Image 1 (cartoon, rainbow, N blue to C red):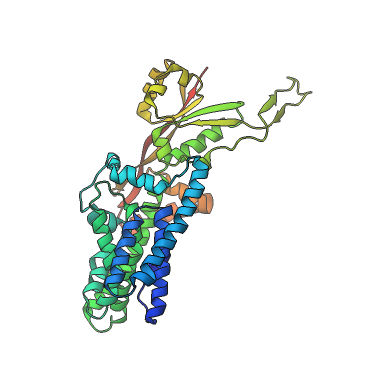
Image 2: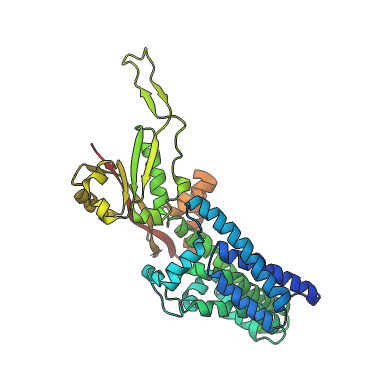
Amino acid sequence: MPTTLALGYLLPEPIPPEQYRKRARLALYLLTIAGIIFRSEIAILLGVQTIFLFLTGRIRIREEIIPAGLCGLLIGLTITVGIDSFFWQQFPLWPEFAAFKFNVISGQASAWGTHPWHFYFTSALPRLLLNPMTYVVCIPFSVLHPSIRSSSLYVVLPSIIYIAIYSFQPHKEWRFIVYAIPPLTTAAAIGSSYIWTHRAKTLIYRIHCLLLILSTLFAFALSNLVLLPASSANYPGAHALNALHRHAHNSQQVIHVHLGNLACQTGVTRFLQMPPPAAPLFHLPGSADGSVPPLRSGSTRWIYDKTEDKERKEKQDFWSVIDYALVEPHEKKRVIALSRDTKWREVDIVDGFAGVRVLRPGEAPTGHVEDDIVRCVLGDGGVKLWNHARDIVRKYVTRGWWAEVKMEPKIKILKHMR
C-alpha cells in the first residue's frame, strides 16, 4: 500500500510545479520508509524514480531528494530497529538489511531456484496483468500514440527500468515486481480510454473495443473460476493443521506436533496455532450408570515443533515425544525409520493443488475445490445452482469442454500410537 500511494502521488497532473514537488517529496518519503521497513528491493524502485524525476526536472536535490532521503531513513530505521530489536531480543537488528545481505550480497537467494533473465517480461508480467489485451494492445498503444505517449511513458518507463534492473538477480519471484503493476495498469487504462472514446472514428478502434470487452469477461471468468479455486487449494499446510485441531483438540492434556517443511511453506502460521489454554485439560469420566455425570474443564495445550535440524531429527528421543506429525506422503517411511517405531497411523491425508485438468466432452468433473468455495459463500443450495449453471455452459457454450483444479495428496497427518 505505501508504494501504491507513493506512485499515485507521482502521477502527472495539471497542477503548479511547486505543488507537484511537494507531492513528489511525500512520495519519496513513503518509498524510503517502505524500503527500510518492509521490502529492501523497493530501494531500487526508489532510486529509479528519484533519478527519473530529477532528470525530467520535476524535483531538485536540496529541496526534495536530500530531505526525503534523510527523514525517511531516520523514521524508517527508528521504527524497524526499535520494534524488531525488541521482539527478537537482538540489538541493533535491521531485518531487511540482514535479508538483503544474505540473499543478494551473499548470493544465497539462488538456492531457492533461478530463472532466465527474461522471466519477468515473458512469464511473470503476463500472469500478473492476466488480460492479454493489456500487454498486447493497450500498453504498446499508449506508449506509441503521439497524443498520449508523453503521459504514458512518464508512468511506464521507471517501472520497466526497475524490472530490467531486477532481472539481473538470478532468483526471481513475481512478488518482487508487483509494485510495477499499478503503473502498467495505469498506462493500459490510458490506452484503452483513448481507444474507447475514439471508437466511432475507425473500424479498427471498434474491433479493439469489442476485444477489450470480451477479454475483460474472459479474465473475470478465468480469475474466478480457475485461478481462485487453484489459489485456495495451494495451502494444504493450513488445511492440515485445521484438520488436526478438529481431530485431536481436547483429546489429551498436552499434544506435541511436528510441522514438516511443506506444511510450514503452505499455510501454517502462528495465527492458526491454538493459543495457550486458560486452564489445563481436566476430565473425569463419571460413573457407568450415569448417576455421576462426567466433568470436563480447561483445554489442550498444543506445542508446535518446526525443527529442520537433520541431526536432531535422527535421534529417537526427538520422535518419542511427538504425538502428531504433518509430513509429505513420501516422508512417512522416513519418520518411521528415524523414530525406530512402526506405531504410526495415518489420521488424514490433505490434498493440494496439482495443476489444472481439462475435461473433454463426455468426461464428468471429479474435482471438489470449486464446490467447496461456492459452499462457503452460498451453502449447499449455491452448490446445486453452480453445478446446474456449469452443465448449461458446458452443453451450449463450450460444447462439453471444461477445466477444473486437479488435486493430489500433499500432506499426511500421522499419529504416534503408544
